[in-house]
Image: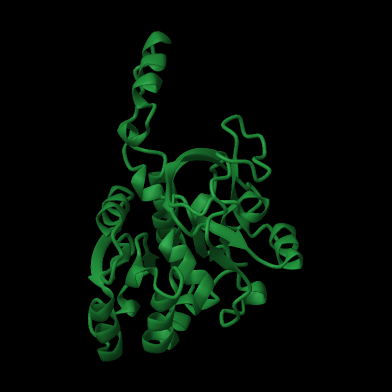
Amino acid sequence: MHQDRVRAAVLTGFGLNCDYETDYSLRLAGAESHRIHINEIIEATRAGKDRGLHHFQILVVGGGFSWADDHGAGVLMASKLRHHMGEALMRFIEEGKLVLGICNGFQTLVNLGLLPAFGCRYDERRAAVTYNDSGNFIDTWVHVTLNPRSPCVFTQGLTSMDLPVRHGEGKFYAHEADVDLLFARDQVVLQYSEPDGTEARGRRPFNPNGSLRDIAGICDPTGRIFGLMPHPEAFNHATNHPLWTRKKEALARERKSDFDGEGDGIRIFRNAVDYVRESL
């Protein structure tokens, strides 16, 4: 394998519906990205063929409504991955490769026990992503602040950004002691906040779902497994932002012409690609 070739697998099928945007974002970030049906990657993994999990360095479980969220969001996806590809997934993690879960994918990683994985125990469920406090599906944009001390490889060098959320089950929940442990070990990667960076403190609309202590995303102790509710792939171009015309005009009035067509969400994918190139 050429050292500069970074292969990413974006799972599709059974209700996952953000695969095109995720695939596009990874390609913009420099990856050789492949949309692959979950049944295909399971079969290829078992047979040791190309497009099996071993063929990739980044695995993304994206957003959507896998199995229509029956039995809870991400529950059946987690069960399928555990029973049909569990050992291969553990080898993938042991080899230092990257796993990203976005929205439904975050719910899946939590259900699998891959997050928060205290002590790098990936077989123990210690958290949940459950129904929004409002009881309603939410489709809006939020501001998030990122923890500079986090080991998360996906967010290195990032401090804050706006991202869209769209979910009915996005509230992060865990026992108080485990939430404290997440903060103590800097596994809380990003939190919902007000636009000026002030803590949301659970207040809507800044914290859209009631997540405990405004948690919007966490990582495992290594920083190589990352899950978040906001959708970085949906901010792949500057014009995705609802205020893009205002931002462009503000730059023009300052006689600046550096309005970049790339959305802030791409930086999360580029960090992953750069990490693979430098470390694997």
